[in-house]
Every structure is written in C-alpha cells, then in structure tokens.
Picture 1: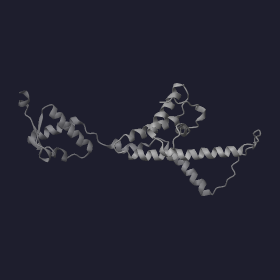
Picture 2: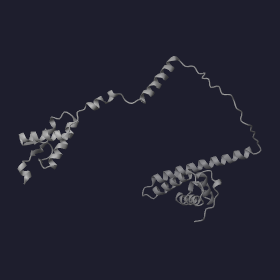
Picture 3: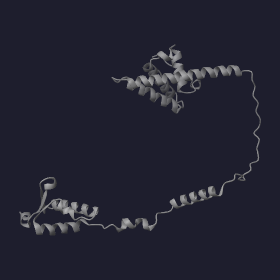
Picture 4: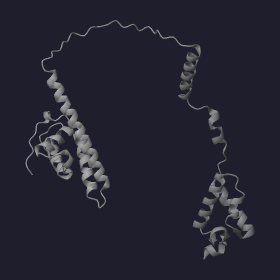
Length: 239
C-alpha cells in the first residue's frame, strides 16, 4: 500500500481525513470502496500513534465504526453493512457540502476587518426582583421540606414488621419431624409443610428434612405429590 502522507493540523476531524483519502485516489464518494477505505484510514491512525501524536477520540471512534462495517460486510447476509455504508456516504456528502460552503464564505469574508475591545465590567445587581404568588412559595417550601426528610434515616416503626417476624430454627423443625414420624412411621412428604404458618417455617422444615436425610435418619420415596418420607429405625443405622 502506498505510504500515506498527512499533516495532523490539516484534518479537523475524522470526516476530513476520510475526504482526504477519497480525493487523494480521485474517487467518488458514491462509488468509494469502503473496505479499501478502512485499511487506509486505520493506517493513517496507526501512523499518528507511531509518531506519538495525540489522536483525538473522534478519530478512534470512526476507526471502530469502519472496522464494524467491514466486519458485518463479511457476513453471508450483509444488509446491515449496506445500510451502514449508505449512512456513512450520506454523512460524507453532507460534510463535503458544508466544507465547500465554508470555503466560499471565507472567500467572501476576505477584506472585511474585525474590531475588538477590552472586556468591560458591568455592575451586577444580586437583588432578587421576581415576584411570586403565595401558593408558589408554599409549594417550594413543602418540596424543600420533603427533600430534607428523605435524607433522614427511616423511623423505628419502619422496622417493626421485620422485627416482628418469627424466626424458626432448623433444629426446632428437626425435633418436630422426629416426633411426628416416630408416632406415624411414614408420612406424605407434602403433609409436613401443610401446618406451616410462615415462609420462615417452611424453609426451616425443608432444611430440617435435608439434614435428616444427610444423617440417614429418614428415607424419601416416590416423586411429586406421591412422595413419602419414612423414619429409619436406629437399629438400621447401627448396621
């Protein structure tokens, strides 16, 4: 590839660099090969970095955009790539028109002088001169008071429902299960949860069953609603 020569101060942005690459190879924006343009643009950006130049973020953003267009164009269905190419070409045409008009305005402005003067300090009156209806002041006050209250910690009453919840221990449910199974020998698995009055109790019951299974004190047989749980005899454990 031909070595790209450029001056950073010639490019006001990534669009300017793209137009430079297009015009350098005497291409039309309508027919410019985007894939070839990607390689040339990335080479220019890499050269900037090799020369330890401060590459603006918009140049890197355009590089990422071009790489993405190239990536999706390699897919079997590249409708998205075609759409992205058309969007980029449209932006290039608009930028080219703006740059052309800016040059014309600059030519017309030649010969016109400009005047400047030292900044003048004007006195600033900090007195509040606007007038408000009473209800507006009242609403502003209520709003300010409400914001202040939102910064305060929640009252003790807000924790009453949390503290009031009964915490059921797993050990207590283990004792309950052993007592119930000792009397009946075998129970339906789901029946052990029917008398639970809280989520904490149901969770503790389930963990107690797992604990008893791990200790080989109970055996669970069957699936779903037909599952049963049976207490093993101590004699079976000694075997």
